[in-house]
Amino acid sequence: MASAVAGAGCWLLFPLWLATALTVLLTVNFGLVLWFFREPQRPRLTDDGLVYAPADGKVVVVERTLEKECFGDERIQVSIFMSITNVHVNWYPVGGTVSYFKYHPGRFLVAWHPKSSEDNERTTTVVDTGSHRVLFRQIAGLVARRIVSYAEVGKAVAQNDKCGFIKFGSRIDLLLPVDSEVLVEEGQKVTGSQTPVARLK
Image (cartoon, rainbow, N blue to C red; front, side, top):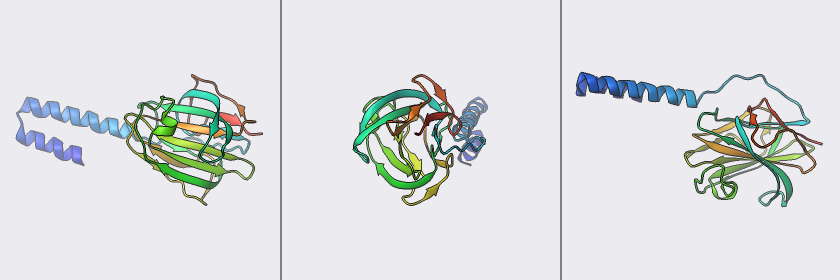
């Protein structure tokens, strides 16, 4: 609507050549916004033994790390970086009950920076499957300035339900039990709700 009003105003206020150029720019901008916020319809995959990718993007970290916020123990971290061209919808990697959720205000370092997991604006969500607890963090990046999460403590969620989105380039960290079998490697591209990231023991 705003683009349409601005476009109409251009034709009333500016010379023909300038109005034409501004209208083209507004149309392209509107198209890019629609493209960025696209929500693809994908097959619903479920498997209680698997952890699916919560986002489209590239795996940038696969390592053991000490998780301090919730568990206080060692976990396998798998991090997925979403560029500005990726779909930015996020999905629950496992099904179960949300046992923990917290929003953390913070900085806006580039999302692939190692300190972004601790310093950037982020949300932390833990889903209890009944057998395992899987943590994932939505992390804002340099351009991303808003995280949306649908998680609520006590809420029952299904695997690959939409859990939120992050605007304009960001990252998701998965923190998995150390006995999980990781099925991806650094540099691999994954598809949210479709690519198995790990197998739970």
